[in-house]
Image (cartoon, rainbow, N blue to C red; front, side, top):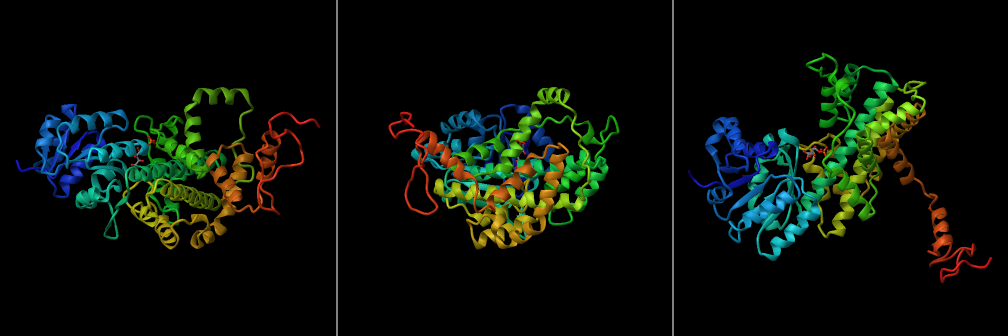
Length: 477
Ligand code: 6PG
């Protein structure tokens, strides 16, 4: 068999789909998995693509089957498994052979691995991919990180397997070391927020307006024809319309309200805190997943307090709800892109801000029509807060009252809408010229002599409260 262009180690769903995608685009690809049954399953599923896939019984065999310099994709679970696999491969690879981690790695791990590879003089890429199993098979969005020459070496393969938008591949080099995995992490944070906002809109329809799942499906389908057109709104309509095989009930009605998570949303929130780049809608979404998991506690709470009214007293127009989602979505993307911009400076990456919005237009889970306008706004000013950019300011003007009405009506009826409420609070803070942080500064100065700035004079000042002398002893007052 001729040598393969590239190898894939790890044939879980994503690895298997990626292998088929690579073969489908005309490249010879070697494939290895620790559990051999997965290789057999892949070859069975490959059909006529099997002629371009070399199944390997060991990592050694995979390494030997590759064209030099070798390129090996890792599609193994993030964390220690990646380190173990890198260790195992390193003994078999030559100095110019490249490892490409395409899992959902924490970007700190990628930075560490990239640094080790750099010190050892070996090429290494950390690449985020999005689009779920279908994306991996037919075209994901691809976010690359590592030395530019390493990216260029495999760009022809990654461009070919990526989704495309108007003929342009949704694959791009984001910057050095962990840049690709960082961008993928923020993508997932936005994904959590986008999903939570949609779930809250569904909750308002289900409990506040007493709509059936089928009615909600119609609303989602109609929203998908407008500004909200996106993969997540589309699939929300589809899942709301689906019926459970065994009971015939709407599928949504038989699904337990306890959400899973693998941690990328949490990483986004952690990094935002470290960078001082607030992402409250994403935080609310991660918090909501955590609250959903505390089902026993929620059941206890529901039994101890008066049940919530749920139903909205004065109803709510579906149009208000649509506006709430439009405004919420703009605000959560504004937060995500702000975080990316701050991280870009902090980690010295020069992230391609409009380029990120561009490669998210197709292939990935958060693909949506709105990203086109976001790309345009970021092209004009890469560091802009999207909610303040002209195009989105006009949209916010039109839709903010729908968000306000929805959040207030839901809260009055005790319907939990943490992400919508966080979006509203973010907007109100972002547009507030004088917040109440002067009180915080006064409190800090009172108990800790931390000092504050004045509105009418330069420098650091202390207040007239004499809470403490500067040596820390309580003052005699
Ligand atoms: C993607 C997704 C994917 C993610 C799953 C599950 O972009 O294709 O973000 O990478 O792993 O959606 O994530 P959670 O289990 O954390 O919801």
